[in-house]
Figure 1 (spheres, rainbow, N blue to C red):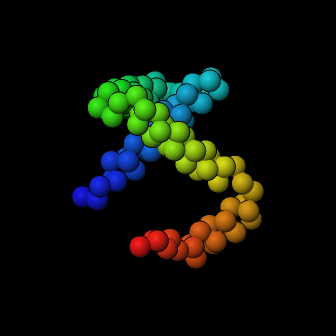
Figure 2 (cartoon, rainbow, N blue to C red; figure 1 turned 45 degrees about the horizontal axis):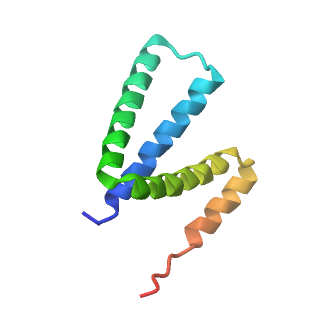
Amino acid sequence: MAKNDFNKLFCFIKGVLISAEVIKASKQTLTHDIKYHFNHVLSSCKLFEKHIHTLLGKDYAQMEDDINSCLIGIVWNIYEMKPEEREAFIDYMEKWEYKDGK
């Protein structure tokens, strides 16, 4: 397992937590079965995040939160783009290649 696989997982968990807060604030109507699963996933993610933050320590946990919140913000912006903007952005990203400075 790569050393930053858990960092990637934390990013997605942060995405679940942020998205859940937005859904709750929007007062969207959820069916009973969706609400049940929604609350179960939300509760599990909150407990997992709390446990990980305890293990990481306050400073490192804050840094992870800042990075993950930024990444989730980028994902949200992609979803808000007009279709032609999103398509151009995705085309650009598919051609982009990370060059390790090593």
